[in-house]
Amino acid sequence: RLGGCGEEIAHYQYARGHRPGSPVTHLNYGLALVALGRGEEALPHYQEALRLDPTYAKVHVAQATVLEQLGRGPE
Image 1 (tube, rainbow, N blue to C red):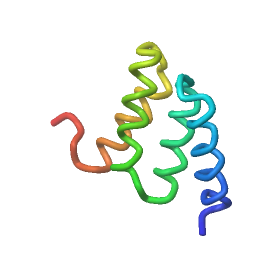
Image 2 (cartoon, helix red, strand yellow):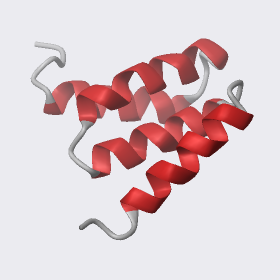
Image 3 (cartoon, rainbow, N blue to C red):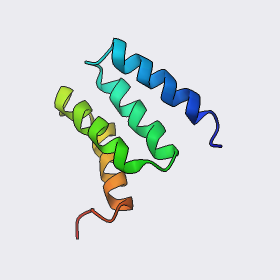
């Protein structure tokens, strides 16, 4: 088990329901999913965070990292 990631997932699921317009919540939820090896599931959360704040650099980095890990990075 990865240092409480299950609890983090539950926390971010709750936060998403109560703060759906928060790019920070979507970023953190995506990061927790990646920590659990669920990078593909993180991508929609990164996309939503970028829709809410297209200038959020941390999301751009997180998304690029996951895409690279999935073999979908730039060639």
